[in-house]
Length: 63
Image 1 (cartoon, one colour):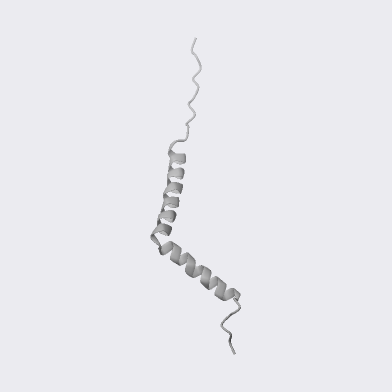
Image 2 (cartoon, rainbow, N blue to C red):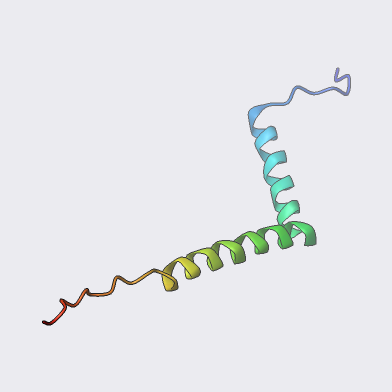
């Protein structure tokens, strides 16, 4: 006879983790956090790409 307490198996623990992750991503605060991270990462890589210092050629001094 079941007493009401169940032993958590690996499959049910993974299912609970998956459902909590999907809830956090569907929640507006979770969407804001993920979106902010994506915008921040995108901005970082674009700034890194476009703001590289270009080496100028050194012209010899003509006498």
